[in-house]
Image 1: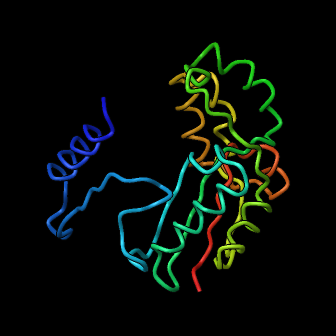
Image 2: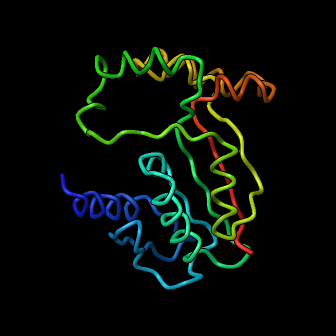
Length: 181
């Protein structure tokens, strides 16, 4: 399925389920490094699972473009894998067995949470939040089996949030939020 077909399907699903309180949905296809929007357009620009595939200079360009389309006092949110998770070496061995991840041929950079916060600051975003998330997903990341996903979902709902040191070592993802000045 092409990216355009994905966008058409997303619009169709939105229109079939949309609340009347929401006026419209604009769907656009574009390049992450040259977003098809005016400066200062959005209150929130969100990126998940993309930025870790680029080197530092290219990440800078991507963050700068995200910041350009964010309104003053708006937010840029980046979510990326925590490659410092204690089970990451095991998952690296399992990933070729349980997924087609290797087929993409796009290497992921291991980016510490503190570094992504610094990189946001380099494009005039004030880092306001950086943390490790999805701690209980550790049991279901690889292999991605439904019984494991159910266990992690229930754990996320009923168990308390672990302390920061455990989140840093066991959180499967990093989230960083910066605010445009």
